[in-house]
Length: 98
Image (cartoon, rainbow, N blue to C red):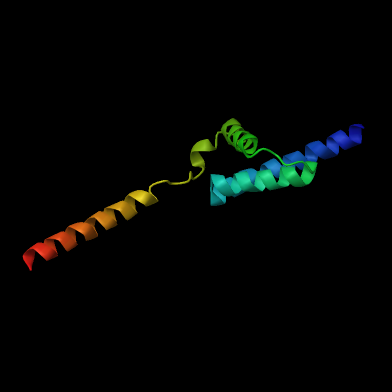
């Protein structure tokens, strides 16, 4: 029983180290996806995505790395809106001048 516990702790440690590495290199979302997939493979039970996110964030916070990880950006819609607005103004001004 003790061997199995040690083996499980070793697997968890490897998963956590790889998760931190992925988070630092590729960002938070790929790290959460990796952690989520590995936990599913390890247990055979579908692991909650919210729980995986919380665990990865707690793991990074405990190591003081949460600020070093790239967060997903939600500003893509703003750029598209500015471009569309500029096109609309250009069409309006063009139609008024002719």
